[in-house]
Length: 150
Image (cartoon, rainbow, N blue to C red; front, side):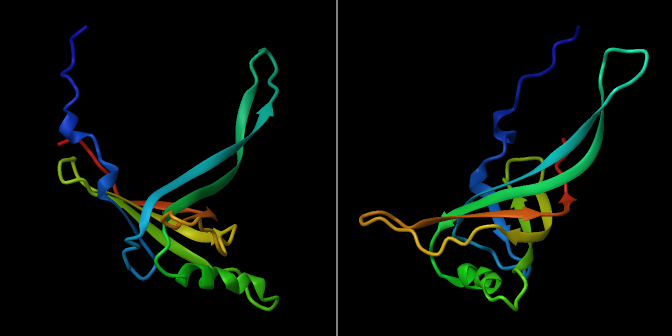
């Protein structure tokens, strides 16, 4: 078997070059972390002629979280509309970009139909920087730009 080359460490992507943009294209510079995952729901399928169970994908659920420093209360105020019995929840789109200049290119993902599932009304500790975490669900995503080796 032929031995492959070693990992080029400078191509490993650094989170220092991660950016989050709101639906208007505004960079949310206070964000220090974001995570988005899709849970795949499956049903077990019994099959004749084998002991092996099959699996059929039946549902998808997107969820994630955003962490960052508290700079303004704008997002909390937008999320607050769900507390009015006559308003719908705040729904938005987010674009996440990883653009390390030493990588093979930028990775851009758009999260669709983002709805926040908690409102961090207030949280602080004397002597500490105020940080917030927003958890959300989403339905749909699009890879706008992928990374490929060159």
